[in-house]
Image (cartoon, rainbow, N blue to C red; front, side, top):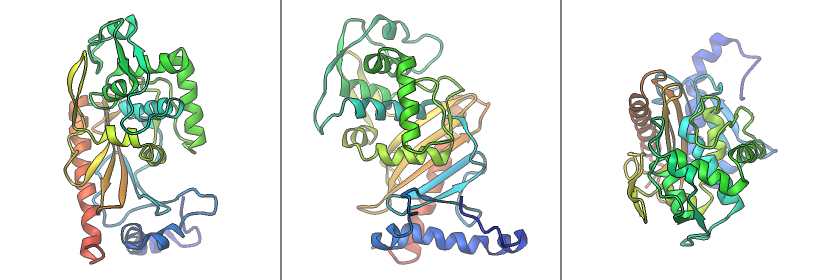
Length: 314
């Protein structure tokens, strides 16, 4: 965490907005060669707590970074909170790491087991109806995992990949450790468990790696898809196609509130990544998700407008 321990709090409060405004300008306006030199020697991004003139959410926590900048701006206490279906980004990442797909490739055909079929519509979870004995391709199941956010498909993929959900969760935790997600704990593959927790800053570490996988990047940018045997499914991320948004994943539950891990283009090439967590927690999943989407849109629009105001973008 970036700090100025030798500077009194009253002085930091007075100049903090100016310093962090400069940091954000560096984040969105400098040429890539200049931005990249701000990365720490160990390759990890510099995390800066922001109290400046950025339209952050009024509650919960958030973090943003420009790909390649070497800086992460955070807002709110970065303490682990339930992340609900943001968990499925790691599920997809682990599956694709172990079973990579090339662009346009469907991958192996995976049998729908009786458990995945039985779980459809049970317990009020987000699921899709599937037929036991059917065979769906890896790519088709990833669509069901990431667009309508089907919990039964998350657990099916976990069993297919690792033999059991428990074994798969251990792989998720190892991947989190490898990515430096020190404040993240995975206890299930879908995010239904409130014990699966993370921070906005940690989720950005995952987002950076996930968006480097062409197949995952393509799927999370898809508004809707038709999956044989299931039908047409829509992406729960309703910001897609607006404000430059090209991904990533929603997540909502009563304990988690509303969460959104997002990716947006600032222009034709630069990718702005952000995480907004714990919006309207302890209300309803629908209320929380609406709040997360609205807060994210405000944040994204504010950040995308900033470089234009400095005249740095054409």
